Length: 89
Figure 1 (tube, rainbow, N blue to C red):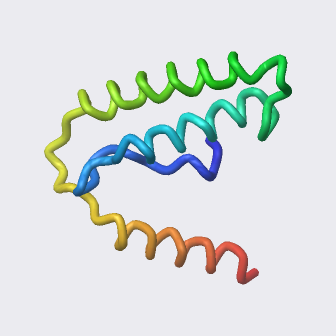
Figure 2: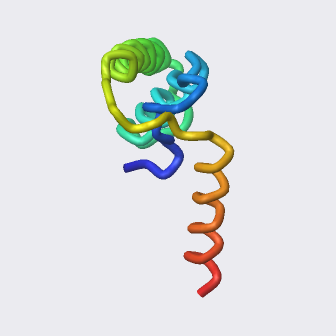
C-alpha cells in the first residue's frame, strides 16, 4: 500500500471530501507510475481520480464498526512515533 494513503474509516469527525480526493490522487499516481500526467493523459487521470474518490466515499460511508471512533491527533502521534523508531536505526 502506498504510504501516503491514510486510513479514512472510523474517525471523528468523519473523513472529508478533500481527504477522500487526496487518497484517490495518491492511488492514481501510484497505479499510473507518474505524479503528473502528460497533456494527452490529463483527462483520463482526472476521470480516474473522480471515479476512485466516489467509490472511496461510498465505501467509507457504508462501512460499519462497533469500535469507538479514532482520534486523528492520537493516530498521527502514533504514526510519528513508529516512524521515529523505524528511522532511528
